[in-house]
Image (cartoon, rainbow, N blue to C red; front, side):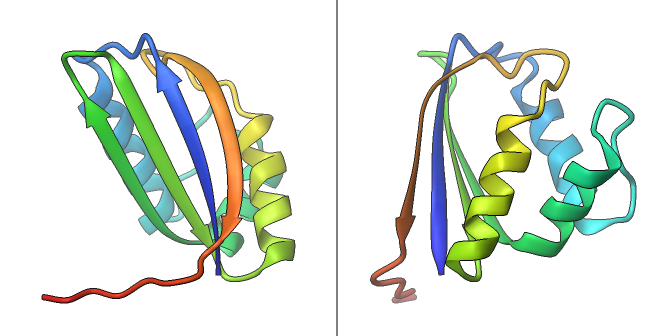
Length: 108
């Protein structure tokens, strides 16, 4: 498993919940946002296995963790996400890194 970690700054705190809900809907349904290409939509639907989005509302910062099943899927998902230009309050991406997941244990 691999995880892509993207950090965003200058995020509109008022719009962050709506952005998260739109992404959740896209991942769980077959509804492609009109601003997203069909290729990007297919890549994300096929390659993403888990998403965790963290927010610091007072700082206007988010960190998105996008998990994929393998390195090839990680490369494809990274390219698809890099090509997106969502409308609204997503902020400015300041960094992106991809790691292999070494340990993922849930204790409770």
